[in-house]
Structure formats: C-alpha cells, structure tokens
Image (cartoon, rainbow, N blue to C red):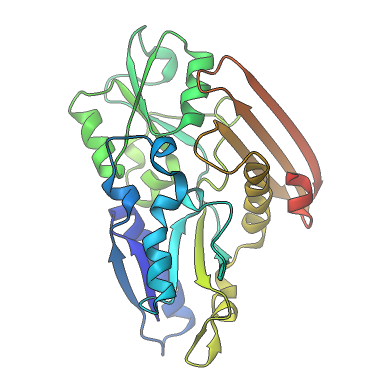
Length: 287
C-alpha cells in the first residue's frame, strides 16, 4: 500500500500517523509513504484566493493515484476542495484535533494586547475578515508557506503575531507556541479545520481487498458527520478560498449544532446562522 503526501513536516506527520494506524490493523501489509511537492507548496508569493484555491494542495496527489503510483492520499481536510474530481472519494475522516484558531506571538499574549498598527499575519480570508471586524486598528498582511516557514517569519520580526490552526501546532509538538486559543464564538473555524481525511480512487482494491473497507476502521463517525455538514455549507457558498466563510459543527448524543458565518474580506459586512438537528442528516443541516 502506498500513501501519497505533501512533503511538509506537518503533512508527513499526518501520513505517518495514518501509516501507524494501518500497520496496527494490518501488520502483514507493507505500507510506504511517497512525499510530493504541490503547486500550493511552490507558489508562496500570492494568496490562495488569487492562484486557484484549495485544489492546489491535492492535484499532484490525485494524479499519482490516477496513474497507480499511490493507493491513497492523506490530507488536511480544510485543504480539500468541496467537489472531488470524478472517480475519487473520501474513504475516511479521522477523529478531529483541536479545531480552533491559535494566536501565536513572541511579545503579546492575545489579540487584545496588540497595539494599533501592529501587523498580524494570516493566510486566510476568513481570519482576515474576523480580525478586521473586531480589531480595525490592526494591520493584516498575507502569510504563506508551511508551518515552519510561517513561524520563522514571525521569529524574524516580520509580524507582531500570526494566526494558525491549533491542530497543526499540536500535532507537531509545538503547543508551547500557542499564546491563546481563539474562542469559536469570536473566530469560527473553517470547514474541516482540525480534521484529517483519506482520499482514494473509487472502487480501488489492494491485494484483492476493497480499499474503502480496509480504511473504514479509521473513520470517526461523529467527526465525519460534523465535517460533512460543514463542507455542505461551504459548497452552498461556492466552496472556494475567495469568500470569507466559516462553518463549524459539534455532535453530541446524536444531535448536531452547526454554526456558519460569511463576510466581506474587510469584515464590514457579516452574516451568521446556526441550526440544530439530527447528526445522521448532516448534509440536510448544512444546506
């Protein structure tokens, strides 16, 4: 079995995590990881909304699967387009890590402490809009690159603070870099944030066994239901990086609480909504 992954440290951690889980389930199976560079990793001088959006992080991995060089790909779910190419499917969504945004700074403990004119780095139109709405006195500048690159830019003094996904910092053993976790009430997460997903070619078999069935034990039902609702919200709004959009669902005792937000990039106009219902019907709730 061959796992395709981006080459960043976080992406490889995620692929290794999946390999370890699969090795425990199928010790007789030889599982390899193939690292690949994607256009999203290579184009760092422009924001995703200007160069093609989420698909830039997965296309090369899908090509490898289509050509038979890989059997599955491991993704951060928030990087996966809402519409998969024909012939591909999400086989499993693993249990979610912390979905919140993290405030990271060497000099300040929170967004509230930043002085007027302080520069905040973020790669996300969603975060940009949310920060601009609550802190119009701050200067928001784009921040691209993998996690280590972004932290390096902060440490170099390019930014007073940066906003990152808490999940990535925790997975790489860097929770100490987090100065504050942003409450979802103030910074509603992106659809799929904190969740990992496994993508496969449809009807793929490995060693004569259906790959979807092999991966089924890795699927975390409550997480899968939550992100399905979130991704439906995103799909309704066009599912691109060009609209500041948030969607976050929680599941408890078979019931789902789904919240969503859409805004203008400057945060001046913002609309939000929430709904509760049966977790077994996530797409209906998202719509």
